[in-house]
Image (tube, rainbow, N blue to C red; front, side, top):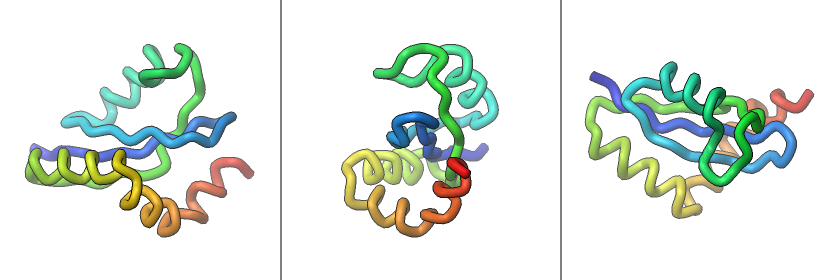
Length: 88
């Protein structure tokens, strides 16, 4: 079984959302139908990045690191062109 850490970006505000799941496709469907915590239902988000892990604890540790901030900065720098491509 795989565990995923994923990054969504809001189409209008460009805010990032970091999450963790065992089933990435199902989680993306859930976000499309129910929205993202703290945002209105129907807000449009795009998947900009994900990582796969064999260990649940590794995935949860990575998600926490991204939500804490410093790791998120370096990830954004690393995928800068991918993020920019969404808004072209």
